[in-house]
Length: 386
Image (spheres, rainbow, N blue to C red):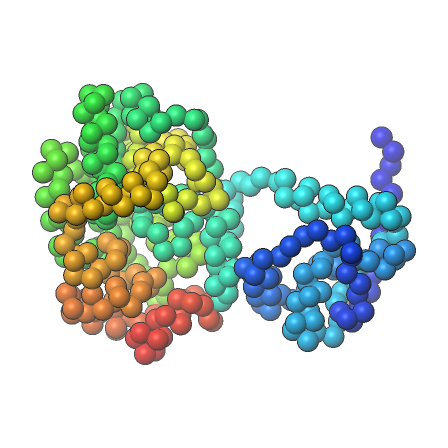
């Protein structure tokens, strides 16, 4: 193989209105990408030059950065100049981005990377969460935290092969549907089934009694486990809220104790959760079955449902739902969760005024660590008047 030639000839700066867009640029930049890049440039600044072919004067890479520089009234853009023929320019233009997009990711390392990131940009939060397979605002039982190993089987086929079925039951609508599905499948294949609830210390007062009642009604053995620390005490001692991107609260207080419990079980264990089809992420995609880090085998049977089938199931099981939904609650999440809507906080005030007062006190003393502005901060300030 021939030695690689260095086609870079110099670097410099140019006024953005002097840079010539390539007439063959085929990339289209959607609004969410524009917003995310604008916010990243605003928070960090320039870290990469745009590329210009000195022979033609055309941009080869960096069209969106130039457009955003013009939009932001920037006077200079860092430029890297290359010297290539028109034919080579076409090849670069056609392959530079697609080759980069061929890279896959080590999700475990990526999630570790997210732990140290705070950004005030809602667009960047959404981008980072999506890349990490985290569904912002989704129920606890739908979080995906690792790479997937996929086989094209029906959900029931995994139950049939399992020695033991564990349903992560949060008390929410989706986890109830998943529990009912698992009960039916386990009865069909004569499999042992158990429900697991993680009590973090910030549940609504009537949630645990509801979970106990449902499990007794279905004849399902229930395990209630606790994380090592109380979630309220943990974050109040820290003085700041959970990370809005990484959602360390989910990993520390839900997923870790679930995974620890599953690791102590013997045989082929399938963990059933209630992820909905509209909560699929870049990592989970359309996969009903996933193998997570640590050998955890995760099954999301609701992924197989269409939106219409999911809605029909909800209507059919309305009489079994947690009473909190009738009181205006949207989720069974922790009462101190800062990632809520005004409707959820209004329901908290109406049904549990003492807890609402506690949340009010917490808002006055806690903050998002290293986060100056975001949609979450704006929502809290708007509702709580901070």
